[in-house]
Image (tube, rainbow, N blue to C red; front, side):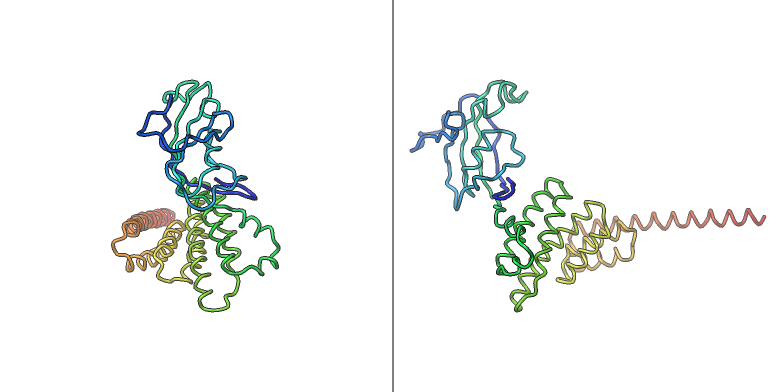
Length: 297
């Protein structure tokens, strides 16, 4: 789920829907199903209780097309498992969803709420002026940055790389405050490092290797032995045909993790690209020499 002022993002597992009346499963529960819609169209049976607060009531459900499922999700807590029964008007309607769901089918879903992120605090923080933001305690700022990064990760998984980049940059923008002690510096650097790695790989996806290299090198300023940062920098240099720099980064990564398949495969790719480059350069030189010889003949 994701949204604005009280936005949230939710991760869930939904087992495939069944159509027709729900099958009998052992003894009936102590408490009957809840009627969430008021007309019997969305019924919920809690199979395993969750913890904490439910999904914020003003949240917007992303990537959910069933009206009934959206209603149901807004009643769930983290870790909860629930069974939902939706009548056709709250499910697939008169059309159904061929070939699996026939027309006018009542369907059953079992859903597990893995997690959700409430963005209300983050949105409120970014609505403040820079001066007001500076008055917030560090732990609050780190929580906001982590929320933004989580949203970025969600968008990245959906391959919405532009949106992910903007979320990561929002997170990075608030991590520039000066620490008051060594413990705070370590906390800020740890948060920065994650965001910088995310920005580096996202710019690679956006085909901006120069920006990917810049953020990768910023990550190495925090942790010069970070293999992910070394790997991203190597990938970026390879994209820019800076083969020597690419090899330097990748070999450094390989020294730290000699059995990492991604690093070793990238080194093989580098060797192949460099071989092709050298052969093309030789071919070009031969053509130039042949052209000069013919003009002097």
